[in-house]
Amino acid sequence: MPHNDRIGALPKAELHLHIEGTLEPELALDLAQRNGVELPFADADQLRAAYRFENLQSFLDLYYALTVVLRTEADFTELAGAYLRRAAAQGVRHAEIFFDPQAHIHRGVELDTVVAGLQAALETAPGLGVSTRLIMCFLRDLSEADALAVFEAARPWFGTVITGIGLDSTEIGNPPAKFTDLFRRAREAGLHRVAHAGEEGPAANITDALDLLQAERVDHGVRCLEDPALVARLAAEQIPLTVCPLSNLRLRVVDTLADHPLPRMLAEGLLATVNSDDPAYFGGYVADNFHALADEPALGLEPETLRLLAANSFKASFLDEQTRAAYLAEVAAHRF
Ligand code: ADE
Ligand code: ZN
Image (cartoon, rainbow, N blue to C red; front, top):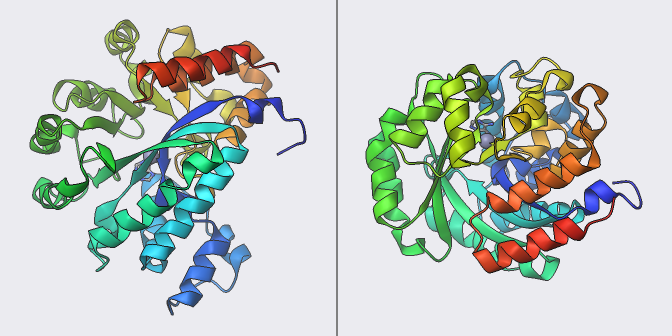
């Protein structure tokens, strides 16, 4: 980041971040070597050159393929530790981090290895000035029965290490209705609930995530603009949307950043936030997303809009009221 970067220094919460999506090519190659895993890429440049995507599925195929390098507790600790250091350097003061347990369990890595590894890294976060939460996501292209089995296996960590559940992976063909029992169980267990919806899938998936899953926050949600009644509801209820501009660009949800719907979402009074999704794959961490937006003249985002987005990120978080208020005061006091 540039020296004296006031956008970077703006305090932010990151609410939509898949820890597996922070696997930088260099770390992937190091871990592959350490674990004796063969990758079909000779070096980091070759690997980075593969980070060109047609749509969500073409990205997911590479994202899941590269998880093979993550095998031990130490691997997960290193992955999350690297993310936390980068996030802290980009002004992230609070991170609600997603992980995909099924992507690891189904290739023979124990749930305990994944959670213990991530937990060890999260314990170092306060030393970096970052508070954290961990959100366990379920792969919507797998069955609900599979999700329920993993959910039950994770119970020992509920409320302490794991504070919420999410729903991610292939949206088209896997609507929220598939996971009503899972989300009911999460509600009964006192866990927070978020769901990807309206990224590639229709606005109806957003409505269903709210009505059928009682999701408290919608990940992406950019296609809500196709349904004016839904927009009115999201605005009235101030339901947070975790928008990921560089992800939308790289996965071709939008053709160019100049076409990004974020300004329209804000104009509609939506509680939209800016997040990085899978920063190693999409060309930037959270402050890089803020910079990309600020540098696109067609979007016309003023510094005060960036401040609003940062404030929204804390409002949309699962922080307690007192901590939230303290962060909001810091955002208000920030000078560009
Ligand atoms: N898993 C990781 N990133 C994702 C995204 N943007 N959409 C759905 N699933 C994902
Ligand atoms: Zn995502």
